[in-house]
Image (cartoon, rainbow, N blue to C red; front, top):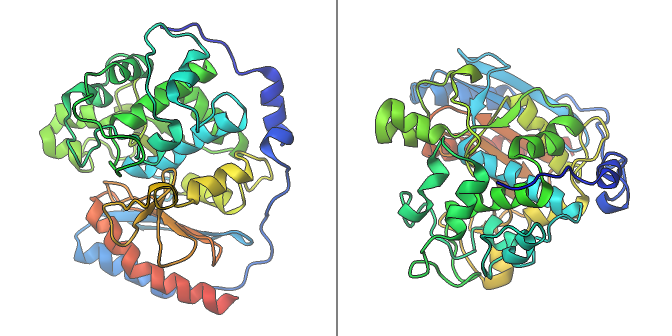
Length: 389
């Protein structure tokens, strides 16, 4: 639909060398790790899997200073099993947009009509909300809790067409009677994320797959990280229930995923627990991967973790335990430095930046179980890291 131009060579060179636009290199790096006993943590997960009749799980624990401290596969899961992330994709997607902000290709605080206008797409009209508002679920657009099957945004679930075509459809949607003024309500998920992905493609001249590769896979040397749109495929193969719970058709073989040029930006990510752990470690180290290369600026990582909705309009999420929200991160207001990005399939990543650790518990189940396993295991890890100080 649009003429594509590669990212400016000078910007890519700057990013790879950690120049001025991405801050300096050398933040963080693993030092000598203490001997930590994860026996109680593992036993709790094993008991949880048995009680809930789950086949398995994959777990990783990382620390800002000590790197990967613990990784284990439970039940029938292999350590390198690829799992669908659902909404645990959000911090990954938000990071793609923040890298473009680092590179000066978007300004997340400018109205999106101005962002798109840089490439002169003919369909752009005035929309007053910003990417910052969209990534904090505060654009006012209809969200998943409001109406997950809101007709003007249904292309977000389609395997057909392209991300830019879907973005255009959402941008031009007749939704004026249903949207709220920006920064007045928290409306979780939905078409605002798909539109943000389309804007990323327009501003960069790259596909979403290329952007994910350049943001994470190449600098952090990841083995598997990509996006699909399993919601449509799950509906086709099993109806509504299959679309809303972990799809039976996917057991880690990416060949079973239908190719699409319209990936789900808020919920279509898939990866291994080791690769997700690398992303968590990068966030703990201010944007620097474990190999010493920079993926995001320190400022971008910090901003993603800030409670934007609380600071800007005194907003609250729908989760009393995590009432704040940044860019993809749910933010605790009771536990300083704790942020999480739980997914509908039970994928449960969180950071405790005060204690310096991050965790991913990859379940293939449902969101409530992911929340439950975090409640059970977080106190165990908190005690473990408090004692290690």
